[in-house]
Length: 276
Picture 1: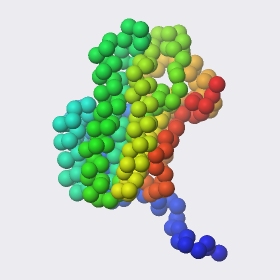
Picture 2: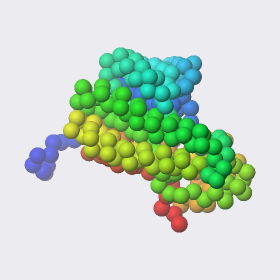
Picture 3: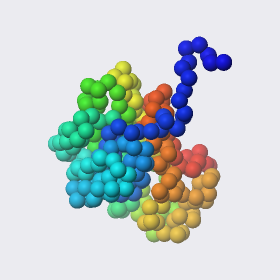
Picture 4: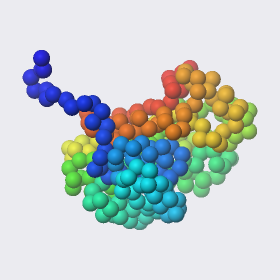
């Protein structure tokens, strides 16, 4: 017998369907961003892929369209520059007449240069914050205006376990890898806090805002030693798998399956952040 006031639900799988929705995935041409764009395309969404390179964005969009029969668009985006963000949002809104989903994935840069805090270049620190925090804020600011007019939307900001726990630098040094910069952790922690407060601000407009914090994923750039030593610190015993482990979580947060979830930080790390 059904409880009063509770409607009979359709098949739960239907709530993960994104057919007819339009999604932006920033940095969706490579790495975890490509996995997330793929997940949304497989669920039926029309996907807008952004990249610093217009060619890479268009190539990624064309592949999604050809493989999944969706409408897809590639756009150039330099997300730490407001003019670029504003132009991207306008073109995205014109593409299908609406923006239902924003996945703020673009960023990164940790490990590409010497991250030793004691000698870290100040300008590199500023750029890291600009890309990984201000860029996310800019994208939220530009896209939220369109979502407010629609009266609904889903925003998923990609943070990191780096914003939740300190990082053991010994593993980096023993495996000859540049260590994670402190300001990267600061930026990702800021994304988590910003997402929580933005969720409160946008809730009256029917817009959900959540963050998603991936743990350690081997995108093919890590040595066997770093992979082995890091995996020992993960309860499930391995790094995240590309082509799968991030796809279900992001689809959940972008779909109606998460309609009673906002202001949440979904951690996808194999238990890394709870292991001591």
